[in-house]
Image (cartoon, rainbow, N blue to C red):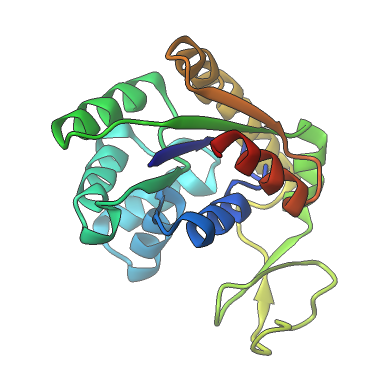
Length: 207
């Protein structure tokens, strides 16, 4: 089973991806994780990607598609995958379909997690991450509740950049809703409910 998760930055796609992975034992393919790993490693690709990410712009298709293609060929993705943060454009969606078709696979569901933009601004500007274990918390977490590590705010989690990211999403990514609706595999859920309620709604659709 292959699932594409759609939704603006901060809509809760990562949380739902974790729940889906645990429930259905499929691979998590997150372009955000792949790109941040490249940034942390300081590779030429990572430095190039960081300039786009810090400005709230989309990383070029040529970079992202190559990374996702390699990831889909790894052993843990053979039984299915959750695609989180990819595709973001119609061109990427077409490239993904071509790559999966070549592997004898396809997309079973495109799940759109819908959240009001101002709710997202509040969520992301309050978000804090642990430098040690990657735990995602909020401004109230002075230290990581899991490992005691230092919490920090990402460079792109400020109101100006968040709103720019949402504008970019509307212009470049929202048309994917129509793309997958036309393919007959789009499902929309309310992302403003609690994470468990959102997941229950997703499970009812999949099952």
